[in-house]
Image (cartoon, rainbow, N blue to C red; front, side):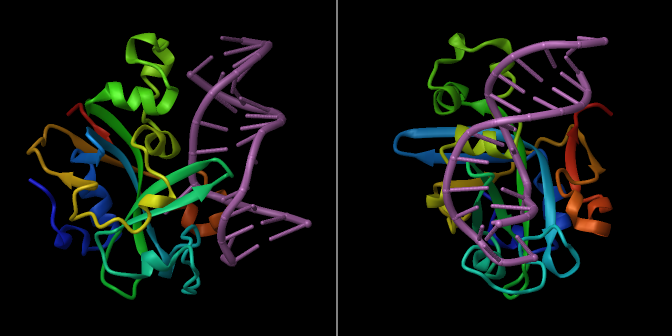
Length: 197
DNA sequence: CCCATGATGCCCT
DNA sequence: GGGCATCATGGGT
């Protein structure tokens, strides 16, 4: 069943961990893509020098993160890639969860076409295992761009459902590529699925 | 597997 | 103008 807004209206660290193992659903035109969320990171502006909202100043880019929970924050990075985040906590605070990796479940074929312009059976082994294992890659695979910034996660285009899968644990580790963030770079706010044990 | 490097454009952290 | 919540590629081990 589809997660409601109250799921997102919690501390970003709780939401980030709770999103692991859930199903991300992406719909556009006639396409339906489902994949399991296997890696996330939390960002909380008040105490986090890695957050785009650090310092509390609302800018055109970050304003969606200061708004109510349960909306998509999509930003453009390194001149080439998009990253998908879910806004968390109450209105007025600035926090979000970055979706870092997905395991394809349904319609991997469509993801292949979006990523490489080729069918699954034309991909190399390397390409096949790298369809959505990174924040920029998964946005390509799911056709997510700046146009999806602000998308309501209780709507039909992008949402999360719980299929009851619980046969995993969640590992916590340091976040990736935020070496500039001083003490915040050591926060264990990265969550990854552990299928064993 | 690992590491180094270049691509490329928006944002102002 | 500096930097960036990334990725593909190519070479070494």
